Amino acid sequence: MKTKNMFRLFALVAALMCTLGVQAVEAYANYTPANKTLAFYYDDLKSTRTGKTYVLNTGTYSPGWQFDGNNLSVQQVVFDPSFAQARPISAYCWFSWMINLQSITGIEYLNTSSMTTMHWMFQGCKILTSLDVSGFNTDNVNNMDGMFAYCPFTTIDVSNFNTSKVNNMSFMFSYCSNLTTIYVGRGWSTAAVTESLEMFISSPNLRGSQGTTYDANHVDKAYAHVDGGPSNPGYLTAKSTDVQGDVDGDGHVSIADVTALIDYLLSGNAGNIDLDNADCNQDSDISISDVTALIDYLLRGTW
Image (cartoon, rainbow, N blue to C red; front, side, top):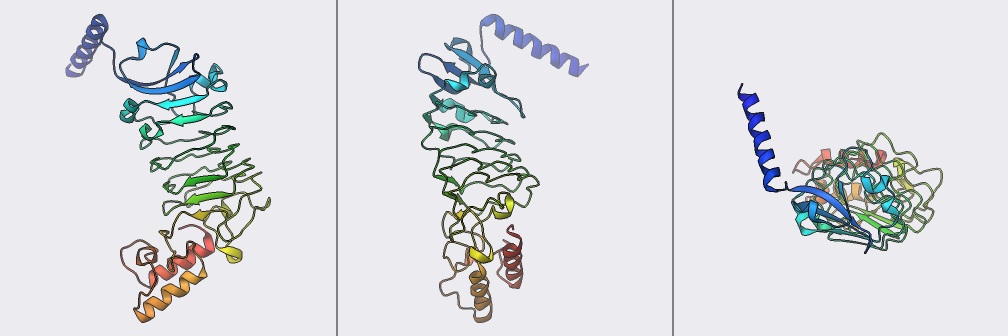
């Protein structure tokens, strides 16, 4: 009975709000043909907007601006400051094939902490000259399939990404003909990845930090780690020396870090080593177990 009474109460409140013209606060997108702008809002003004408004998509359902073809006309994307309060759960195909998109502003107001998929998020943004995803929280993302496919960037910086839950990276950096450098940080991991089909396919100018060049025979997650040179080739570059396992602080993880770590454990002399990075298994203690973890990483390419 209590449950039924609560439902009735909610229904009465909703009816009263409607009667009084009170609009609910919600997250939505609005396309204005006059200036070819797709804007994202979180407010109670949806009914007052000119142009066309859209509810945000969920899961792997395409957004409305994909269905009606307005994505092909968008030249600007704007995130209103109000959108900082929204918690979208999917960015599936949000900017996919926006072939005329020139700029994205206010992206700092996009809170991605609740997102589980970024599948095909920026694919085909062929004339977008810059993209800042440094503020993205990817702690809960499990799908990055095709996220940057067909993009024109020479560098992609995902050094702030935590990919510990990502299971699909297929086509993530595929068909990026201009791409030379991919920056990653300590949160980068492919341990959970089960699908990485053609992750780097047709990105011929890609180069790892130690000189590893693109090889059409290695386009899946096997090379999706910081380049360790001929002994452990990879396509990625550490953003800074603050990288798990980079004991000697030279910007990449290699057999030299094993040597530096063993020397420290034997001598107790920290010298120029980075003690934070030397905690390879991240248990807040530096011991022989970190040597084991580091060697395992060099052999497998994942932590």
